[in-house]
Length: 119
Image (cartoon, rainbow, N blue to C red; front, side, top):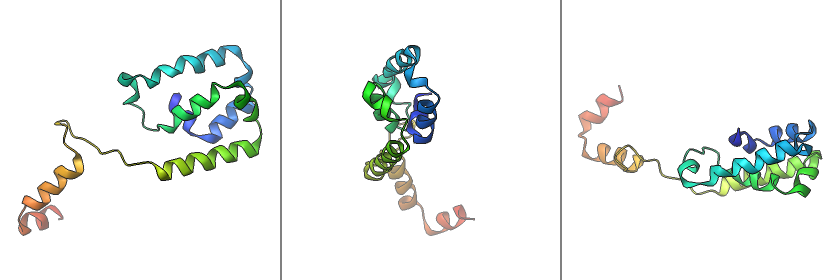
């Protein structure tokens, strides 16, 4: 569920359906902060969801999210942050960066090896 918070349209739906006014849902949002712990955060694919979660913990923000213009601002800010984010290197099971490992394979392969791998 926490990663769904990266979707501004879903956040708006939650707001318009009244979820943010329910004390039980507010406690649920507080509970979700455990995703910031190192043993869980590494499974987050959409890290902007944690920034939205932080915003949703603030009562004033929850009230404002029912307005369409606020949701569009949130969407623009998330898109901007996504465009400015640094790329996180992918690692294989040995801990090597995937891109580096692929480059090494290409560099160590002979011309016939590359052509045969391309089909």
